[in-house]
Length: 340
Image 1 (cartoon, helix red, strand yellow):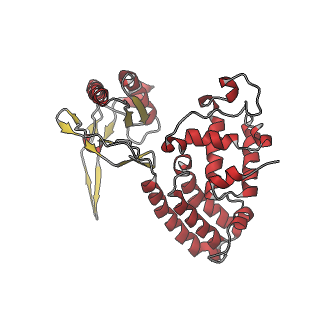
Image 2: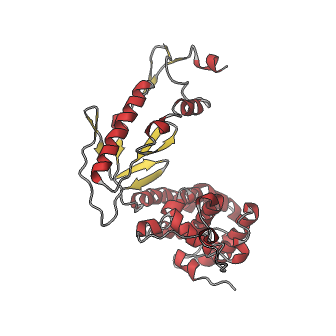
Image 3: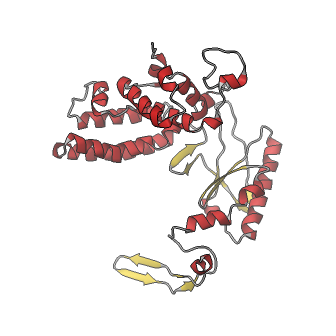
């Protein structure tokens, strides 16, 4: 069946130029899979499934269909350059052996930096072709910067939300509250929640929260300076930071195998022995990341909710009810909450 699916396939290119349409000749597809097919991505992944093994020694590979990212780390500059050159050589030979072409015009490299880290002066070439440096890159819909500040990404979200805000302002007089809420979840909530566990704790997220409150006021026909906390509760819509808390804690609960509990570290029977054990780190950028923040957020949950974490079908509704009830405007406000 697979043989007949892949053999004797033809394709052509169609170009539309105003009112004129140009057609290329039909050509036999000698390599690859039919474009736009459902099986295409799966067959492609099967075809390249040995690529991670080929370069696993010197780099970590992140694959999504034909989008390939290499992560190379080393505390030593000389070792880093050696790893980098080895990985590029191995990758190039693998692509060549498997009749694949590396698009150098779409290939860039990104150096991740901290405030106290100097940018390395790198000259990266592959077969005499220069690979250009970039300060940010787009990966699966997220704009990732070299400093991981998420400024570029939040600016991109702001642009989308501004368009959604205008649309909601126009249609609000014509729609019922239930319809407006459906539209909010379709056009605003979907934008806000995508990747929120990564950028939701950045200082630039406050701009997203401001436009979210503006949209809520428009939907409820409230005045510009009216408090939104009760409006969020009335609509049963989570403020940005509450949504961040929800998404991050759910990530932790669904990936508990990535975390360690205190009782796995020591045998002392304390009241916190079932809490997740936070790793030691003085790096602020790590402390704001998903792993460290997720541990702190989970550990601060009320015991009656935390105890349900092994039953996700009960845990998620209980957590949402808790967040709807309190509508936290900030992570600090959540940590200041004291349960009985």
